[in-house]
Image 1 (cartoon, rainbow, N blue to C red):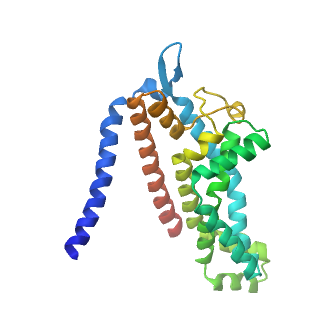
Image 2: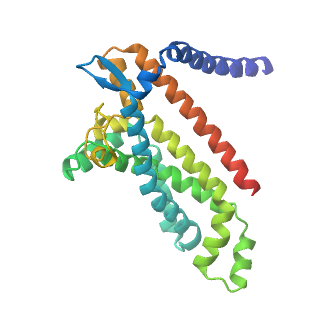
Image 3: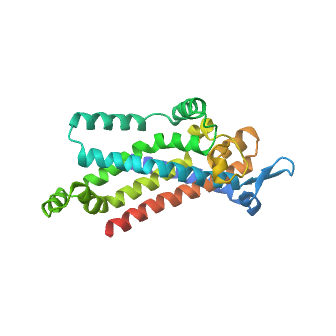
Length: 268
């Protein structure tokens, strides 16, 4: 059994190492400055992914600005204020159900509601609103678990000293749970960076560099969507592997940042 367990673990690590090594082997040689800093132009016959990098940053900004108040606020209500166990159970069941829905369904619903019904057009705003719904369960659940780690005696001590409910939550509970909240937020950013299916229907396929205001209502492809376009529609395999390399590096950086932030804030 020990041999089989070591074999299973080694096979898993070997598959991961092979995948990462193969992507780096194909992608790193194609990472050039013109590719990272330029735009795609059919007239000039050039390919650049700067618009896709900027669009990825735009959609992270929109999604996190909208989801953080909603997700953290919902978690605070469920943990600190809600008195009806039935209501808490219903909301938790809803968040867990949302977490299990495939992302392609979020994209379809986002297209029907935000693009067609609300006439927002394909763009960063429609894609960001779709991602808000998709990552909301992650923010709620991680914040809830972080709030539950704060000892109940801290709450009782603050209330005994004359602190109000909200003052107690703001000055005692939230600082004690900030490490888990920040870690959950960073992991949510990682999911945004790696999402493509939901954005195919909502953010669009545009490869043009736009300012933030224009990108909100203009077709704007993120890095993952651009990877799909170059690999499947344009046959630019080298560019696709270069984008895949960037996405792997971003994912690694996000995971390391989540671990570092969690440990640092927990010590503080």
